Image (cartoon, rainbow, N blue to C red; front, side, top):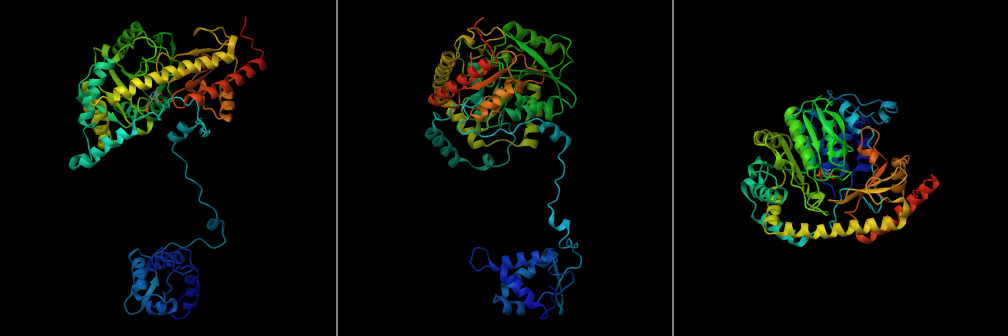
Length: 513
Ligand SMILES: Cc1ncc(COP(=O)(O)O)c(C=O)c1O
């Protein structure tokens, strides 16, 4: 399309005639600018060639003068055309050449740039979860159907209406002061955490707290002891920070180290309800671990993710309450007690760590929403949090026992009545707290394959192997019972048990020795 004024105006007229639309959805000056720019970039309008005089284009295309002047002006401002006084408007000579038409370069999609080595290594082995229609058994998912939404929205609207000034700007207080105060009281009374409100930092989930803690306390190459099996979310954060993970086995009393492990900078544990096996760390083991951390100059990261839902016996206070050396960083989340999309968690830092963590959070991640945080503060202070907790505790306790009954009814002799089964038996582990049980499978079964087969049936029951860096102590499945309602859960339990019984028969596993 060689366009000297008046010479190839017809070609441009045809091209624009095909592309300009008068349906009023996009202003004509914008369309004209866009299509002329497209013609220039693709080489239809050659470098150095003249654009028609604005008047000629107006007449030819039946456009208003301002429409054309506006489009030309925009192209000139962006450097696509230059106007020469008295001589007209020309396509800039300084633009890069368009790819030759018909060549591979002009047709092939650009090849993607490689990801960083860090991302490649983090993403390796991560399986994209499908989204089964009913994600029954998805661990960590609470029941959101019982949440008092109307009440929450009323509290939230009150804060939305009154929010002003600094509450709406960039914040760097480590969280809303009212929420920090409410949480400090709750943690002191309910979890035995030894803290002042100033030691609390509100994070957008515990996941963010893992990143912050790693950033503030450990350097790439430092060692973190991690329970094996353990929480993959924490493992992911440690790996992203370049830490060396030392898997440490657990027994009925919790983390069981031998002393020959390399010195850790961090020790990550879930003492109230080991994730995912479910044991509670004994008092003796807690004292020994605090001592070990002090001797090895390590920070102890205590993940107290779901101990609010205690179903069996009195809860043990958090390990943080036993700490006399300022070694424990206590982490909590509201994902289980309320709902995950709230994206709210918190950490209680030893006094010396509070300021560095607060500044790192403000600079790198920014603080969360003060309106949500103020809403939660009211929710706690007005007693709704406690009431919701009590209600959910009842629901989950009942649901867990129904799940146990349903599995027992269909698994009969295969199911051991203790947590130490024979190798050819099945056992249900954990359940003293929280919203999941771990189903221990007979030795020799491939839990990944089994989990995959359940996935094909619409159930999301992750394999225990996925929680381990080394071969798992035994094959197993993690069964969340928080997210699905009773009827759905019972139906899924029967399907799972029948399928498992079929697999056991196929493997000639008797379970009745
Ligand atoms: C053991 C454990 N820790 C921490 C979390 C963190 O939750 P969030 O990042 O949603 O606050 C979870 C969630 O499932 C968990 O299972």
